Each structure stands twice: as structure tokens, then as C-alpha cells.
Length: 171
Image (cartoon, rainbow, N blue to C red; front, top):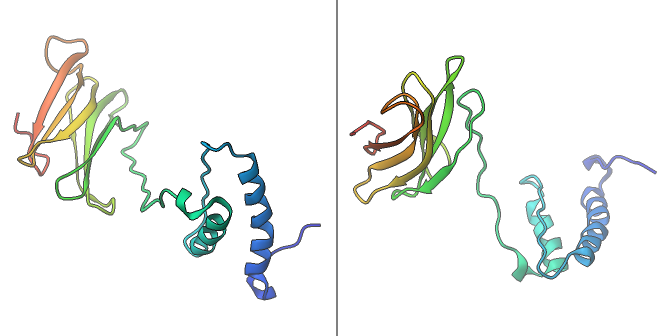
């Protein structure tokens, strides 16, 4: 028998708990000792779910909440081979972005600690240019490593770019 669980019926949380508890209990019984379970729920119910999971799985087994989750889209098929926490508590990540019909460029994003974009820049030439790694140096600048078909001898050469803390190319 299917029935809706509306908040108007006055038993919303009781109905929710009656549905979730046996399912989580079964999941615990099926889980290996070294197994892992991921549970997703909206922010409005996370505290109730945490209480139930602590009872079933033990509070000492809780590992983490996701602090934030963002999607960054530069157009086309983006991927990020490297992300690093920066000295200011934010993040720096490299990716590639489609520029024009057939070429890709390096795409570097500086994020604050909440994942909001502080700055973003693209780097490259007429051919495909890919980032494979980014590191922040102790002076606050960045080194981006990758491959280029735009510069060098031609044909997928190594690429190293040094950026200042605002993403301006130093060399």
C-alpha cells in the first residue's frame, strides 16, 4: 500500500523514521565490517538521520559531512586532474575548457574556502593545451604543469606555467 507522507498528517517524522529505521538496520546487517555506506539527505533532516545512524552504526563510525558541493562549467567536457588547498584556506584547481570548435585550453580556478570563484582564467594557444597538475608555492604563486600542442616543438610538448597569486602569467 502506497501513501504519501505529507507534513500535514501530523506524523511526518514518525512515518519517516518508521520507513528509514528498518532499511538502515538491514543495510547494517548486510555491510561488511570494513564496508562503507553513503547516505544523502537534505539539510532539513540531516540531524534526525544522524541520530538514527549513530544508533544503528555507532557514532564512532561517522566520518564526515560534505561541507559544500559545487559544479564549475567552462563549457564542453571539463575535468579537473588536480586540486589543492591554498595557503589562505581556499582552493586552486586546474581543468581544461573548450575554446572554439576544436581546441582546448588550460582553465585555472581560484576558489575561496566556501567554493565560490575568486578568479578564473584560461591559458593556451591555437592548439590543445591541457593541465595535469597545479601546486601553490610558498610565495603564494602557482606552478601549472601540463601538455601543449600550441607551443614548443609541436606535438604534445610539456608545459610549465608560473602564475602569480591573481592568475597573471609570470613565465
